[in-house]
Image (cartoon, rainbow, N blue to C red; front, side, top):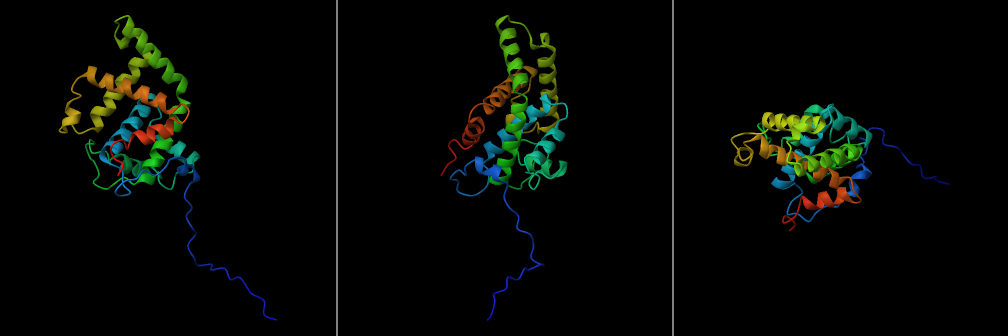
Length: 208
């Protein structure tokens, strides 16, 4: 009697499984599988704000990517730089597209880091409101002033001043306003379904 034998193909390459956490963000109905310009810009700015908050900078992003098992997309500093340089406002922007899968990985990492910073985000936004109510400058709060200073430095060193949108942020006041808006956005990402809502907002007006 013949007995069927299962033969293992030892030379077959291992199947690369997609991290399940990526399924927490839906695929928008786009014409192609690449992120639109505005989405690439906003994702990078959100990560820029996190870097200004967290002194470990891009290292924190890499560590979180590893914890979430997203290292297949965010392997190291070079791959992270390449993904973020799809932001057209960057000094050395890459012409390569940012796929939806890559964008999901960046958003998920950013939102998980934001959750770890929830207390600090609330403190800084409260301090900002209190100083504004008293008509005092943000320099009166050391931690907030430090964040704003770091954000301005990051933005000016990494963005292309020849771009019209970058040139529009030609003063400390305008950059501080952007930095504070990003704090609000980060706090929004920490709420219930905040990550999914932020993801959906990236494609407003872009869905086919």
